[in-house]
Image (cartoon, rainbow, N blue to C red; front, side):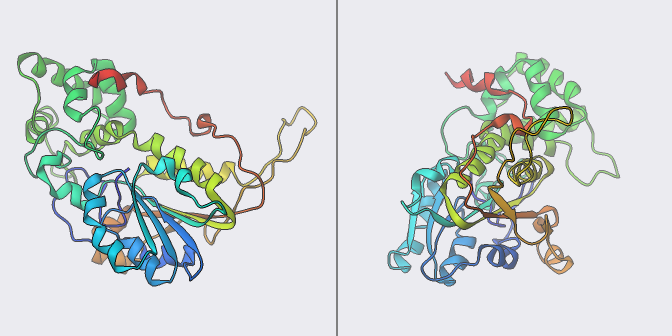
Length: 341
């Protein structure tokens, strides 16, 4: 997933924003970077968290699936004398980059970066007209592929679950009717149709297309699946005493992180009707409060911080558990992966 170290917004319709790492002090407090530690930043982006971690004395392995972010970070690599490795990779594969002795920390900041939003040709925002793309890695199925080729029932499921859009059926049927005449090619083309189908009301705080654009972006980049796999990978890669810190920006992401830490907290197997077979050892202990949000002062300074939530855990000595995706209750939306074939 592309980086969002506070510099990104989960509002797909947002315009250009200034690079301000969200919850930076809280992230550093949870991570405790120091000389001799190796910390992996799974969402490099513009390097907000990575720079601060390096300033704390730690070595950093930073990942990003966006080749543009990797190219843009080379100056930071050069400036830190071998303490920063910058790798083009999805963060779901972070365990592949861990040193033999394990990692001292992993930080993940989930969402889309302002750099991606600011570039019209990436197709993330309808504030700037561009191709209907949204691919963080610049490869694979695009948003245009989904909008122009997915069945109506599949579009409804995507918009409803990933965008929490109450008008999903109306929007999906309108898309089907319009694409029969002319395929969707640009961001404003799609946003314009949605605005006609579901006009903005005076009380609405966001553009009518915001939730659909969010859903398409999450689907195209498999953001929820990537997040879930990254949590499992961090569990494998962290050494005992290692720290996992995750910042999310909307309820679907936060629900996955909350579920993961709750499941890994350790609990008895069996049921209330049967004897307990064994106790599951906790693989993570909680760090600080169950959830940390931005202060009023930070939210006023940086509007993107208003929806940010931080959850963190300390790796125990218990062996990593199986990567069981069923704990998250995610729907199977993978059938559309063949659209780009």
